[in-house]
Image (cartoon, rainbow, N blue to C red):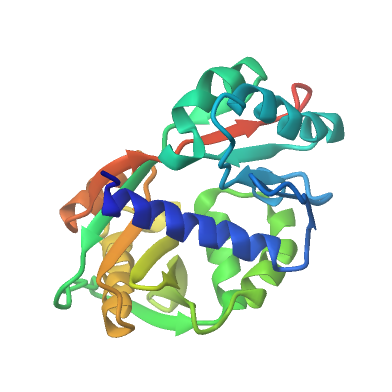
Length: 257
């Protein structure tokens, strides 16, 4: 029997990837059994593959076919897999092709009443537009500044009825952020990042709790997220539990400095 918690993780992520494809900023493939998109921005998020649903017995063959043009372009790219998206079957194929595996935990939490964010003294949380979120998000994740402009275009194109962005300030300065991505009754928590100088002060906890509360306000019955290893203990304190692995397979050109 399918685990409804895993299904919520997968469906919310697939919808997020679909929003990237439909943003109009990318060239996209037309294969019915996988979603893929690409552009000339040399960063994995902007050249990606996901939501694969290959016919039984064809995973290895189809993986080679899908990856080949990405390798030919020579730009960093990623494949985001899920249990239904052949995560286990893809591992030996993609690692042999030179992609590095990051075993990202897919986490789930039932939502009920509001959770106290315990906002630290001197900190504030504010709903903002995507343009205000981007600089903090990019800095918090250690992304190169060149992704700010294309990332800003994508975030601005997200359906406003499905997304909410939060910015945390400490003594008036932006230090953390996060986004809520709604699909049906699922609150997907994404883009949760804290600047180095503000970590360890409870701000990431406050942002995550506030996003979950916003999900409750908008009718969500559960929340999902994709955790980093560093962030996982924080999410577990908030009641999230790992229900699956949603590995990211990332390829970086061998000659990249």
